[in-house]
Length: 206
Image (cartoon, rainbow, N blue to C red; front, top):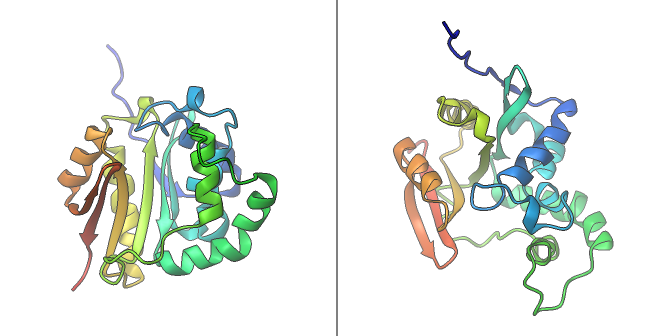
């Protein structure tokens, strides 16, 4: 008889997890699917959506780990405006020197990420007063369907509540209906809808 699967433990991020963050970000970065074929530079997705959180707000990075290693993560910030300012000071400058702003007609995946690096993160979203935190969560296929996504989210929300954060938001692609359904089941509602997808939010207090 096959032994039952053991639930992967959720634990705080450690510096040795950084390579796993990069790998998971790439392997889930195409609307929830593997983005490897869409990016010539395999580090760019992690440079934008994973590594800066580990560098600038490591206390809000949590990972799920199974027998094969880190299988997923949740990471983010309690204050999106403060985080954007920290990126401007400590994260984007080196990447901007490394990656020139691409031609406006360049539609490659790498070009879109380099534009994010040069533009920085938005700080004028109308819902930031009520939802100042934001997050990213990704799980490799072997970790999906086991309740790990909910466990990661619950750990992250607990950390936000301990900090007195009133609400959290996230962006989700219109081409990732599974993610949208997951967030809705967790209690998120749509804040804004755009051609690329939607901003969703969850109130934590007030």
